[in-house]
Length: 285
Image (cartoon, rainbow, N blue to C red):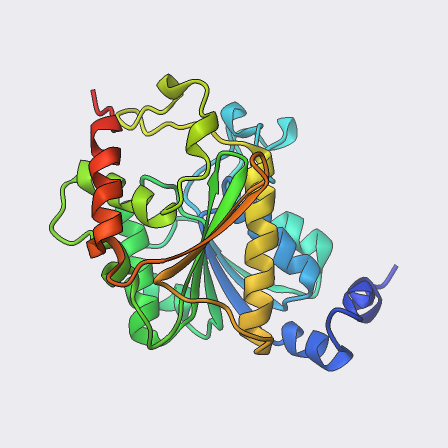
């Protein structure tokens, strides 16, 4: 059967207008990291009807990805994440323009990855601090809106970096910090409310030395929903979205929603107290 874009995304109409749906078709989003949250981001935005994607990941699917990653199946073990997610997105929308960066985002292809992009969505692994900092700095310099959503426990934490507003570096303050301190500051900045902390029943599963931590598919799916909504609001100008130093965290397990405002980011006195609590718990053995 011939593919009909209008029919495929017609059930979006009502929450968006026909004119807005047509505008989404002309938009381009970049997603770096296609694992736990990144793959779900791409598929969610494909179903929203966005017309063009730049997607990047150098990794391949493995068995330990099965509990949470949208592209992880027995049939995709060993396959490149960028190829699998591109194939799945095209299965949703064959008309979408998808450019894959199978080596991930590097200093050499950064310009091409962000070329013509209307919004950047972060899906990079927690431990890939250098790549994340590079991308957010490039977005800040180019005036590209950037969103990151962290899957925390059975919930989500959202940060939005608005063009002309507080930058990623101004919020997290990672410059000059060693690896351990960067992890501590990233955790504190992502989750000022720490709603997920009380129900971590097996703390030994958090192993920063091995670059491992627990995760749930519920959190990843919540990230995709919250991020998809944020992207829609950014692209269509549909009402306010609180930028950094605001952070939003929703925890489905505890049924709690928190908005935090931290002027100065991790330099804020409240964040400095939180960092003092986090640092001793980072086990880098």
